Image (tube, rainbow, N blue to C red; front, side, top):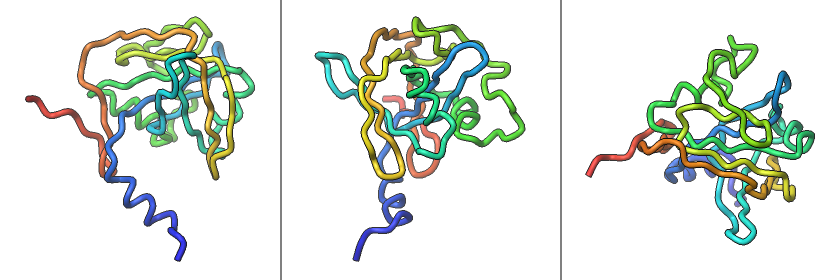
Length: 162
């Protein structure tokens, strides 16, 4: 019997992930989406990948701009993650009220994040109902030295102190 979506999701909820917000576009045509399907891919050349649902607005914006920026969220930034995950339908502009700076590409960087990777689009691959966007990391910066925001079991989590 083939595996169904809800069963697959139930098992994947047992895998802890970091939380990021992927941004693209500068100026008035900005897009952002919460992503936990992010991974480094290669050191030489420096590559990382993200997986974006084909139904999202950010999906079309990434190839249109040719770049994306991965913002690594810190513990305490749950509200930012929820905002870009579509849980704030009252906001017409998801970036409204957020402190931002521009990455070298012009993509938004969320102030207070742990760091960011500014990527040019290197390749796109089909991945079922998602597209796998591989980015060449053109610039990266570590910004904060705080615990990361984690997601596990359908809820935000933090690292336990040792």
